[in-house]
Length: 220
Image 1 (cartoon, rainbow, N blue to C red):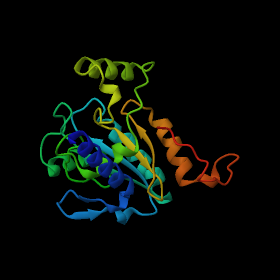
Image 2: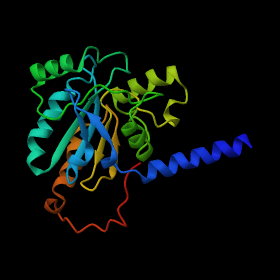
Image 3: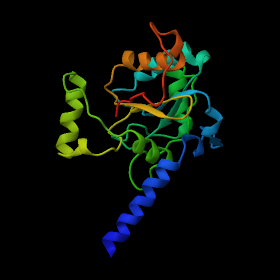
Image 4: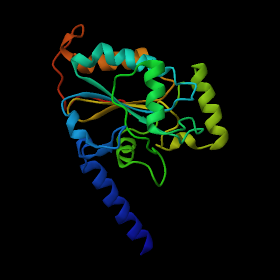
């Protein structure tokens, strides 16, 4: 009976997640005001959990470069500081914003600190992880190999779980709200830019052809 009840609850949870849209979620900005993600309908989104004292923190510079290059074509980068990984995002959101402005002159939206894993994770991240789970680090890359080794020491089965592994994990969302890809912090920014370019300018790619949405396959 208990097993049946658990199965029913799990099924309800899955159905709820699948029925939701990214535009149903609300978040708080860096001054505590509630923002509906429906404000970003029609935009290509890159959603990132960030930290200011991480080895990947210099990615802020690359993210700002992407934003400046593609903002006019419909890209929005949504930045969610998170202190869950090595406590590398300490301080208030105001202090974090000041640091990012002073060091990287970021112009893209920065939101209030959130948790992306666990009992207190933001519902947005529950949904994002349900859309795109973890597909692994590239262990042929030095940083990917390092991350794999570090996390496997903590949990031998870490790669079988969809949770966020570290700072600067990214999700690419299409103009109509579909989660297209998930990128780990070690993924090359050049590859991410190529995917963004394809989304903001699909008809300007070499040999571009109209896409049949029913036949498009997305990497999981």
